[in-house]
Image (tube, rainbow, N blue to C red; front, side, top):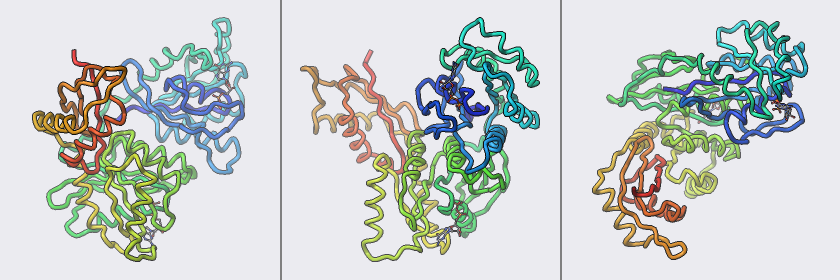
Length: 436
Ligand code: GDP
Ligand code: GDP
């Protein structure tokens, strides 16, 4: 089931990113006194009453050179498109401004639930500031203070009441769900079209609509796949669709619903910082990853070109050492037929379950080869290892003291597990726990 999404909307300086940080519980976005400052992270996860949700700070999505009011309006539209619940934030100290009214007007037009929050109510005496805001027409305003962390519990209680009850489309265990992420124009839609146009591919459902995502289901040789839409693949003609932040937002949603994520690079342009950022999200989410170098037709090649390109990728994507790389051209269709088998492989690795006795043999052999580290005279002891989850494969190692399991030793164990079981295309997790 996908996490519910909350979006925070409001004009600049009402405290959106302050509230975002409070709710997320860490200072992930940069709060500055400069209005409209570029924020690093605008999307993150939070938890309230044991429900995980995602939250978007729409204030961090700047839309080109649009005038101030137009930007706010578009941010509100993004919230309407992307969120399940909208927190409409105003500044209690300013009263209702013209910009607040504009936001209110846009939100009226949608059916999404809106919770009105009046920020900067820093003490109980200031509570009466909320009464003016009834005039916005969103019922009882919730007084909060981002700076002091007041009122957020009540606000989230109210937001959580509106979380959707329906489940994500259930395609079944055997269906491989994948998405293509990458900058605009790297060739994601061309690649999907090339895949769907392959021999023996049968597209069964062109518009299975799950909430607002558009999925395409297809079959090849008895294997069923669903390709999950991200921004840039089915353009709806809205101005903000071409912005970087918005495409990241869509990518994150798609990543979450996927088993396998194809990180698409453009061979013509090489690797840029944004590619790494996007790929980092797939890694963080624990998804299987295949790196696709598209537009290979545009590159002038000799016998060393591919190897050089590969080395360059490995250097930039050190966190994705396990991801296979495919070089292809969506345009000429050269080697596009190698992609589905690679997706199959990554998906298989992602769901591998290792037999416990074999797992422990591999770990014990590893320990015999490279003795466990010591710290202050204490040696790490490994008692027993068990796989606790798939997608991605997750291993719990029971030890005398988890503190003694250094990063480098964990990395060594990971390498040994990879040597033994492959896991090509998938991250794996190793967690040290004290034996009780
Ligand atoms: P945004 O532009 O809507 O994201 O607003 P920011 O989160 O950047 O906040 C704008 C300014 O208001 C910053 O100087 C914050 O420190 C300040 N601010 C945010 N929340 C509160 C609050 O609850 N009380 C007070 N007094 N100031 C706040
Ligand atoms: P998206 O924004 O990532 O979905 O990218 P598109 O699929 O819309 O492709 C962007 C542009 O790149 C279009 O003009 C495509 O025709 C072109 N393109 C896509 N794949 C290839 C390729 O393999 N080789 C070349 N030369 N051009 C490509």
